[in-house]
Length: 404
Image 1 (cartoon, one colour):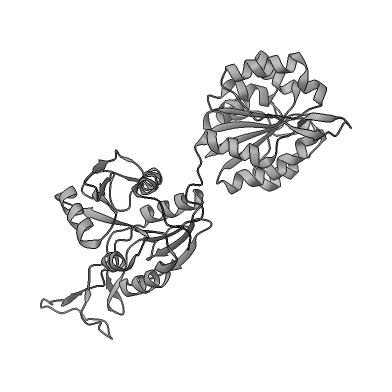
Image 2 (image 1 turned 120 degrees about the vertical axis):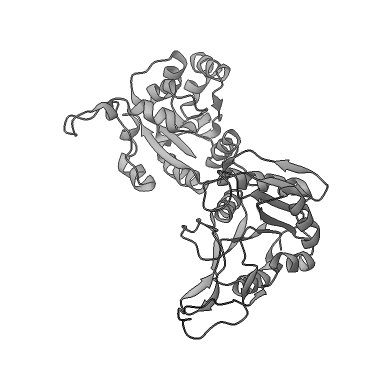
């Protein structure tokens, strides 16, 4: 999610640097916007180094900058449309006044008027300015329009006075951002073991049996679980995907390797989500040399691979176990049968013949099949959105075990 952080001109502007880091820790993409006065307290270079992005400081390009173009002229509109939240911290009395009056004489105030995203302000100022009737009226007006306010803390102020006016603690500001954006840490203290991708079963030195799994669903689950506070162990077959930041990544190739990795780490897990498309069969014999082409037909002798989900169902203890079922017919019927046979609490079933679902797509269409007899169909959505829906449902199955 994208957030614009407005930094205005007060001594507390230096605290915005730490705030940027904390917002990034929440997985947020931060675009910093500074007023001219803010640049007197902290240089834009500080925030550019932290975010890796250009810091917006002016409505129009400086005289010695590149010539203005259409893109630069409507940059405030572009930023307004792509952000999920506007946070102003610190917010000076002057900025609050501009917002309340609808003034638009710099980039930040124009951005405030142009965006439809939620707005949070964290005021910081002298105690007398904070208590002044004009400031309180401006705040009342902003609150009436839906602006969230993180009230300042009390204490010793830079001006030498004592009272309300200190910028609220970074934790309080971040918590308000979480509330407004719906960010959750409801998996904090949990260890989530996830499998993803295909497995490969060798036939000879140059050939193997596999399937079309891209790993996107499992990796989306890993990213979502990390963002919601979990420690994540991701056991992954061969895929072409970047490893989500913050996960314990365990690369494997064959079903046997995946089984070994999963069974070794399953005692640590409080939640296990088996999203990998594990090969059900493998060649009974692996040829030492390449099988040469001939005119006649050949027959492959296949044997079943290890049933990782079923083995976990027998040994999971108090952990929550979720499986996946890729089907082409009788979606719910087959998924419910799998649910019973494997000992899982939930099966995520998808009909891979549907457009926008299944392998190697960025979207998915799934039905959550539950042990209590319910089937919950979900509409087509991104795999990242599906991941959060799966985690939401896991939270409702039963109380999660205590961290191991």
